[in-house]
Every structure is written in C-alpha cells, then in structure tokens.
Image (cartoon, rainbow, N blue to C red; front, top):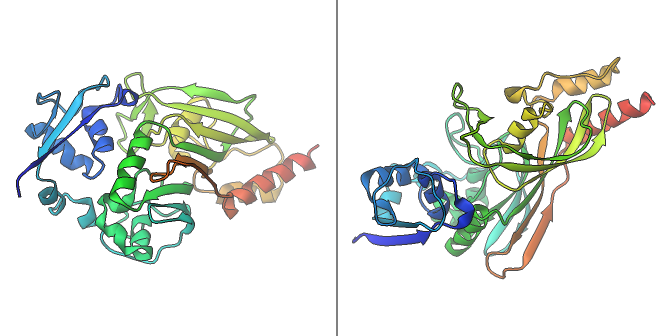
Length: 327
C-alpha cells in the first residue's frame, strides 16, 4: 500500500506542548511511541522540516505525516494489538448511542492495559460489551482517569466521533468536574495555576515544575470538617495527576494519596470509627463526578453526572458526623 500523507494544523490551545504530545492528541489513531519514532525518522514533520520530539509548539504549525498507517497499526507497536482481549469487567454505562458511550469506571480498574495491568481493564470490558470498538484505535479511548480514581469517561464508537472528541479534549472544550476530600481545613477555594512535569527523581510521579506544561485547576470548597475539606475541582487543562499534584502543592493532599504526601491526618480526639474509616481509605479520595461535551454527531451539548461511590460517600458521612458530634 502506498503511503498516504496526513496533515493537520496545531491549534492555539496546544501552544507550549511538545511535538510528540501534540501529535499524539491530533493523530489519535496512532500511539505516542509510534509518532515519536516517526518524528525521529523524519516521517512526521513540522512545517515541512524534520524536528525533535521535544520541540515546543507555538500554535499554527503544520504537522505532516507520511507513513503507512495500516502497516504501522498492524505491527507490534499497535495499541489494538495489545488491547484486543474482551473480558467481563465491572463498570456502568451511563449513556450509549451509535457514536459514543459515557461510562462510570470504578476505582481500582485501569483504563487500558499497561505495565502491571495486562488485562482486566476498562478497555477489555468495553470490547466485551461492544466488540466493534476493537476496530478503533485504542478501542475508542480519548482521555483517561487514574486507576484509583472513580468516575466518568467518554468513549468514541466511530472513527469520526473519535476525531471530534480527541479534538475537543485537545482544545479543552470538554468540561470535567471532580469531587474529592483533602487533608487539612481549606479557608477558601482558589484557582491553582502551576505548570506540571514529570518528577526528575521518580518517573511514576508528576510535580510542579517551572519548565512543565501549563496546568490550571479551579478548586471550590464544598464542606469543611475538623481536619479535612470536601472539594470540587474543575479542570481547565488535563495533565497527568493534575488535581493530585495541585492539591499537594498547596499543602492539602487528597485523603489516601500517599504518593503525593497524604499522611493519614486525623482530627483531634477522633472517634474510633473516624480512625478506622480514614485508615481503610487507601486510594486517592477523588471521583470524576460530571462530564460535559458537544455530541460528536449532533453537536448538542451533553451533560452527565455520576454519584460518588460507596467508599467516598461513607468517608464524607463519617467526617460530617465527626464534625457535628464536636459542635
């Protein structure tokens, strides 16, 4: 098969992104690893010139790809080749039509297979529920939430819908609102505008870095307890672990998030039930509660909500009861 060129303009919203990251968002049918290799080989150019994967985009550049997509996607770097096993997996379908699905993912289930999670993921469950998703790159996945975060994701069901939804994610027009519980008593909500990049000493962590990518989280206080705060967080950008990193950066890590500094804080003179509940909460207390996007076919604005799972609801109830019992 002859190579078919593909080209797309980098939108202003991706200014500051690396070339490989921008390419992964704009050419969502290919894995980032494949796109990075093509950049290094000169098969993916910026304004007609070979470049490096870490080149920062300004917006308006022309990314041009000349590669045999079908050959690449049928090879060993294909995400579909690694994610092709359908399995029954526990998740809820909030909405489904011929163009997209909205799912409510439980905590403890990874979105897609990877190191340490070869199967039993949301992708495997999606393929079991709807086998035709196997024809799509990444089984229609266009965004992720952490394995131990619960809540809503939108999944594309057609190639056209995947292109539209991936573009909306890149342009930050998909509204995402999270509920969480943080350690410490926050005085008021705030907008956290701090760049995030990979931790130089621990590749599995992210950190606030001056040379990182712009990250903005709007945090609102929902309730204050004696040593904790229930929050609502809205994302203006979508960096890895963004809410977790930003909350830790202001001295209020999420309950259970020991990776980012949670210490199992307790209120003064706690009831045994409070101690047991907090010690038993070993995941980050975060839930993707609301999702809003333009439907990929009709263009109508769609809004969906998912109530907090039992563990998070029980945590909030215990902290509220503790507050009330101490006046």
